[in-house]
Figure 1 (tube, rainbow, N blue to C red):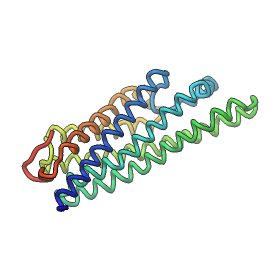
Figure 2: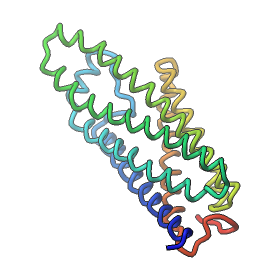
Figure 3: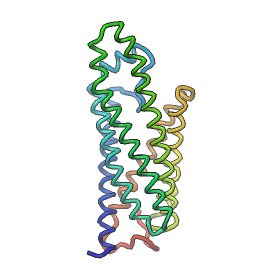
Figure 4: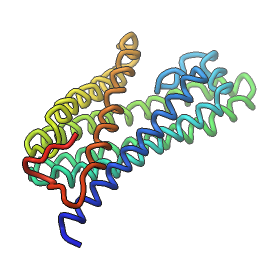
Amino acid sequence: MSHETNSAHIINVGGACALLGVCAGLAGAVVGAIYGLGGQEIPLSNSTDFLSLVEKQSALYIREWLFLIYAIFVVGEGLGLYYLTRPVGSMALWALVVFSAGIFVGIVQDAAVVAFVRQFPTDYAGADTMTRLALEPLARTVGAIIGVQQTVANTLLGVGGALYSLAVLRTGVASRWFGGFGLVAAAAGVVFAVVTATAPHLREFAPIAEQLFGLVVFWDLWAAIVMLRVGDSTPVAGSATLA
């Protein structure tokens, strides 16, 4: 097997991972819409929010698992993008490092949310009034830790995505539209990270930031199409333009 063929296969696997990740993420969003779960941040402001958390535990648990699966598949997407853009040199390597660091933090954060949603509502529902009053500040602390992890993850993923997009623009391995849109999606991810980091001060911008984050999902889908179209005879760099 030639080096070019091996690289093409790795890129194809990256594309498949990106596609599966997007499917999992969209499935999670659908679950959230059906059961009225709101945005990615779980509200923990007052007793009403905690009772809602107990009521919607099962749906939240499914949604957060799907979001975790999305994050896991993004690991493969990042590797595929590296092999797609590595002829550009050190920029692609930096993109891989930053992107991988971001998704690692993201996986830890998503896993923490899954564990929280699995255990905390059950304990809260079975507790007496005084115990609940003690549990609520603890839950907010856990939520704050998860928020910091989410901010770090989205910032690193945004920077990594921007570097990959610049590498695409430099190598010409895909259309300039794909590279340019990647820069916009990266900026949207960073905006979401800023809104998360400054919560609750920018709470009024949270819905807009959530919607802008959809650009990241769309770019993941576009990346899947680009990488799946790379064949054994397709040059990984040069004048060939995909998607």
